[in-house]
Length: 399
Image 1 (cartoon, rainbow, N blue to C red):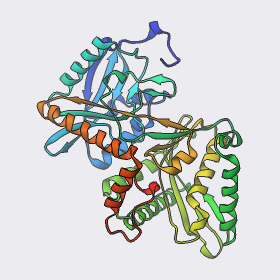
Image 2: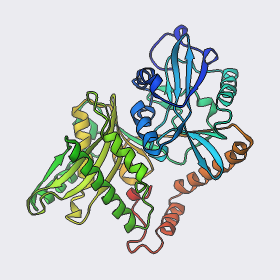
Image 3: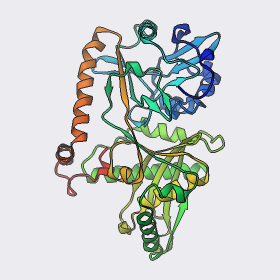
């Protein structure tokens, strides 16, 4: 259990009364209090969920667990319809890298409490959804066991990858092949200096931020199109979501989204060779997305250079974890020493949900089997690429 209140101060699940809200505003203060706890994911933070639901005009069903007039649990859910079935899921969908829900001072429930909790959830959401899907949940995260670990249904097909930041940058890269890392950094820098140099930039004005985000969308779209892959950032509501996140003011170093880039100088003045979008909550930094433009000096590996610089900055600013998010890709394994297994929780609420649940579980397990087998995964990537002139996408673009 996490360090915090003594066991006697913990609230039992049996003491919770569940409420369902369709508007986050009345419990904003309680929400922000819970989201500050280290064990709770930034993807269930108030600003993240609000930006998503406003961009998508989502129907909400926010589960609030109250005991002794104090909120101890918030599960923010949006209701989406898929093939005639209503699914309740975390706002953010595939753009969430790690989910937890929001919990405070709750003792891990025993089997009976867990069953009673599930019954209470089903009663609270009756008529609102057919199936609850809580995906990408680590059963243990940074020394804390998840309170709902007993409900885990199946392992998610994706794992997430982290690099612990050990006080300073030198100690951090010492976990890796530091000599090789430094050599690659010097080589990248020399190659870019030879064509005029570069700046490591983090725009501060609103106009610059939004222009750089639009450039990311353009770069990513072109890159994915080259390999015949769908552009998950193309829908307008997804783009609105990220633009809304950019408008959320930082609180100290905490921010749902900041942008960083490698911008060339000299004869290629102003050309942006790489972009990364990072989130920070407490000492946890997550790389939400990245893109590269290889039209100029691709041999300099500007994407790798940008990761070096953002990780170095995160070390200087006291972060403890640099998270590359979900998706098993070679560049993540090259940077990361920690791999986090995630699970999905599927709770049927109606007969429709009961029928869909095993189908979704089978699909997830099938994807996991493919992704764990390099030969099968390569075959699938070639199939997805179809007649792309560049052939299968590199692993960094495949997710």
